[in-house]
Image 1: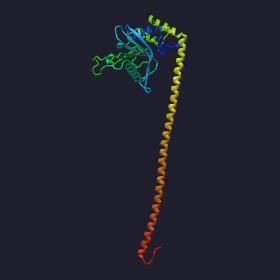
Image 2: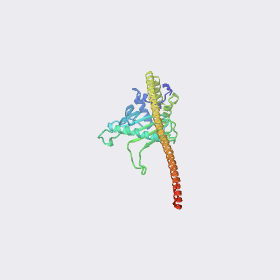
Image 3: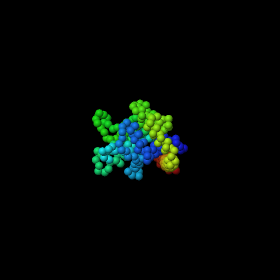
Image 4: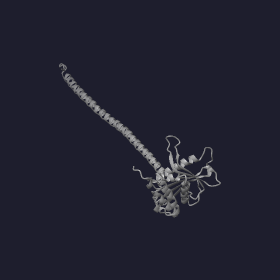
Length: 308
């Protein structure tokens, strides 16, 4: 896979997005702009944990790398009352089933990490997972899809478990209530000066250009790409090895099946030979018996004549 140049990356690319979020000067400001534009409100204190890795509970359990993990702690509130925002820019084309189950998995990992042993469930933090996508996740053309749990039979019943998921589609047109959010999403997909059409986006574009031209960032990007390329190669090699092993096993299984078929064929052939042999023996015995019966009948007619 050819490596794209750093200068060609957009904010929908994980590396550029994560680099700006973790920037010692701009990280909090950038995250605040995104959250305040998405939710159209002011945010309190933010704590940013970039690329937070949630490991599985054991070596054979699936983990996940959360691209940008942000905690909001409004003034006057305790740590357990903070809200967690996981922002995931993603260019992959996923089916609705895969995307929804991936979101469910992310929520489960974050929840498990938020609640300490012995704590009351009411202290569980609000968790909002935000996917920013260049492909329409559900095909309805909406700019924003908000997913919350509710009672199917009585949807008007208040039910707030603190879990929420937002899918932001960069080219969505339906439900476009915020032009500022639309401009932000368009810029994230194509991070050019032409798309920095308002003062906030011009500020973000300054961050983007500064990162793109940073030599240390470029070296980090090269190492990151090489590392991911190595992982891809290992995955391909593992897939080939697994395929070969599966092919060998299937070949052996097929061989065993063919062997059993041949064995059954040989068994049936031998059975037919034995049957034919026994039939011939029976025919010979029957012929001898007929001869004896004929001689006995001849003797009964003339007892003075001894049969041969």
